[in-house]
View 1 (cartoon, rainbow, N blue to C red):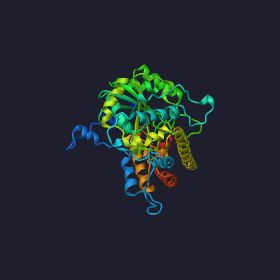
View 2 (view 1 turned 180 degrees about the horizontal axis):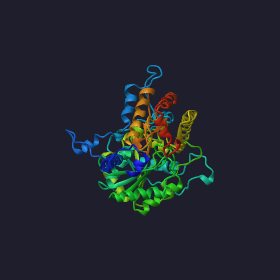
View 3 (view 1 turned 90 degrees about the horizontal axis):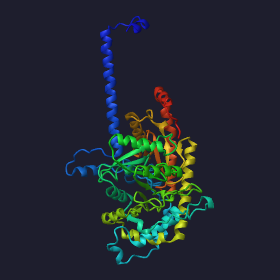
Length: 513
């Protein structure tokens, strides 16, 4: 008090008043800290997908869990595509969805070949083998071996060709009605309720639904920061230590390569880091490789965990399917590749709930069995993806929008933090700003991108832009709208309170990736 009075002679406060003021300040600071802790705790529970839903009349508690949206951005997509879809002639101001990771560009190649398949006989309408017919599993094993693992469709120097030693045995394949069904059954068969799976993030949002809604697993995102270059041992071990400190029972780790939402391919060193981590802690390793044959970067082959561990043992499991790489999400064909005998037997039983349609198996077996046709298709599909990727990235570069260069997939990961109406920090304010930007993009530009929050990204302001769901000309219109919107939004941001801009400039991270 004496020091304050010396600095400011006019300061008039007794020691008692000063003590009361300091206590009040301390109480306020403590309240802020508690509220902040509660908010982060709630956010962590939401990130894992295990928030307890409120009771809902008419359904059980499990049913209330199932009322939670599978994909938070799906409603906006359905609004765009069902209520007011874009049409060049009839509705030029209609909505354009750029938020669904589905590939329609390669369908032009497959459609005429599917049309040539003879009409099925009566046997196709009967029951079949729940885990997939032997003929269909043989066809899938052939495609995975020759193209996913041995890259026979790519012209690569001998030194860069994948090893020929990895072969998929059809007996290690289980087919179900989509990858979501595979994930659900995998979660039920390999893990007990409440056990934890670490998931390297940002990642596919449904990873926090498929293993949670019925199996009730605890999915914990291992979140990479925007400036984090690779999946490191330190990142994984820190996540494991934090999980154990919180009393979690970690039993598995899940990765995706090529990654969704960025389209990056995990390097050999990264895959070895993950494999070593899983083996060191005796974890199940689930490798989602559904974009393995959607590589579009010239001269780059898919690298699978199978290349590094050809013998899986009972702990490594690879997921694939026809939805992405064969442009056939409506066929509902998901593929599990595992060498765990007990797990295969269990899957053979539970697959009766979700077996793949005999009609889908009948239609795709001759296509998948035709090596020459598949080779031509994968070459065609990569060229179409590469062409659209080039158009989109050229447009982004013209307006200086940062993005992560992709090697595979059908999307781009954009850094739009500069367009937020508040600093891009991990807080209620920051995530609210992302919601506002998403809604403004829909309202002002008539386009729907996927916001970063469902992917469990570290900071608000990142978006996934999908460039293969629409026909090419419609995507080009959507990109034109996006370019115009970014330019106009920047002008609006510049007119905002200078304090906001100064705060943003002082944040401890770069504005680029």
